[in-house]
Image (tube, rainbow over all chains, first blue to last red; front, top):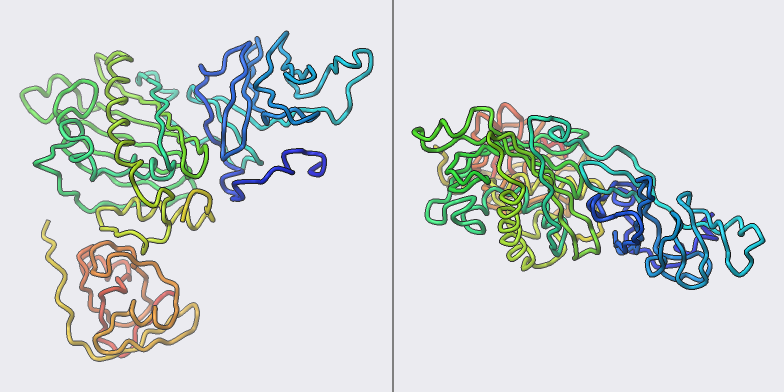
Length: 347
Length: 100
């Protein structure tokens, strides 16, 4: 098969099996609508996404096997992708069903688009370029009706790994998010916390921080973050939020939680697209706009700093940057990536 | 948080580190850290701060009597977990066997 796959003739950017066999987000579900071809990039592979009228979503190599033209420059007609060059028609099974230059002949048997495994979960489109070794990671609040969910982003970052590491770092809050997630003149000392490793990734015990505007309700809170690194480019936190002023405690309740599920799409070693799904069980719930406004601010503050980090590719050897015990999770994250054999996007 | 600055290096006599998995012995001379000695012997180990505040160089030990000088864990935690930080731990025993 590989000798007839034109993609195998292109230089392969990413060689890491763990990334090739993993699920990656390439779009929000709403970005791919029937009748439109969408050009996507994952690990420097150029892909095309499209959706049938019936709802099925497809992600293929953005290349017609005939002469290598970009399918995304073509169009869709009757649930078929039409190549812009010679009009070959591909249906949802990725098979070429019509070669217009020989309309009465059955198309060549090998005339197929190169389709990748695709699924939709949490309002996101996931693709695996190789053979998936596991399911898309769990996001328990997605199916919990007590939680309102809001998709935010996309947010552009340079390194996806640096973006994920930043997402699981509570010590930057007072500086990068001064007045929002932390207080510049009163940074919280970070108490020792534990990091556990399991087959589903890394998870921390709760980490306590003070947040003047810690969630869309804009009430000062004490927040207790429990982080998880679920996959190399997927992370999550669940934070328990306690209203700081006891006199205003009635504005919240002890079960209040704010969660974020984050997936970074690795476009190239130094380009990524971050999408997040926030889940919260506040009563009354904030509006979608209120949630997005806040997240847009926070992630813009993040990328403004994270994108200046050098080297742009994350160093996985701990000796190559200076760590402190309060950076325990980022130390474990880097060591975890290294043990998985990740080299792409790292130094 | 009740954690003090790392103790100044104690004048400990030299000792031998035994690497249990690779079955190697490395001598730690007076004034050297275990990390220094392992680097000299070209043993690949993880480390970062080299002053007992990050925890990157934590390893488990199998036997011996280490002296802990880091602020990442209390000596009691180290005893319970059988761990030490090779950038700053010394040894009261002539031999210290590491799980390396």
